[in-house]
Image 1 (cartoon, rainbow, N blue to C red):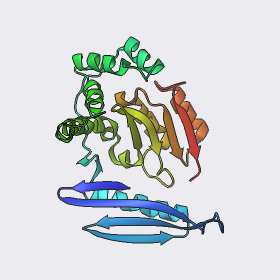
Image 2: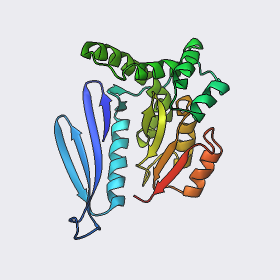
Image 3: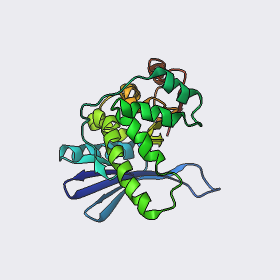
Length: 240
């Protein structure tokens, strides 16, 4: 489900494929697009994935034209400001080669010393682990959310109107998985160009998995091969 915000107004949209009864049919029964605004949900059903995808993208485009912004982690995504991103090849290689150790802490300390926001993101997320004091967890969670908003501006804020097409999962505050689940009938940049921009983010330095629905696998593999994640990230492409 995607959420958009404009001042005090909220809008959310979801797309769901529903199949025939289990054990009776594996065929698509219908595709629904649910739109929620001002506390009311309107659900539209379509007989094809293509028709639902067109409505999905057209609805989002209309809301963006009306001044709505994508909302991630409870805050509107805004363009990224200036930031320092330090290159520390030896420490980065240590995390890449052995991510289960405390090398994350060492790298985060070094990034913090260089005023690189990735260091604070790592520390803020790791500070939430294993806490038993609810009050302390709330305090640390507020700090983590502050740095998530900084990160999100550098992950989604650089993508403009296409930002809603990107999903991401994180590990210690940095991107672990990129997903493009809404590419069918998507307007804007081609998927390969969008993927290249996402992989160029400093927060994508340790991305391990890339998932794409409805994409040219050969072309996308070429994008990864030309990126900093060449040979390090796996690609999965599916038809729906």
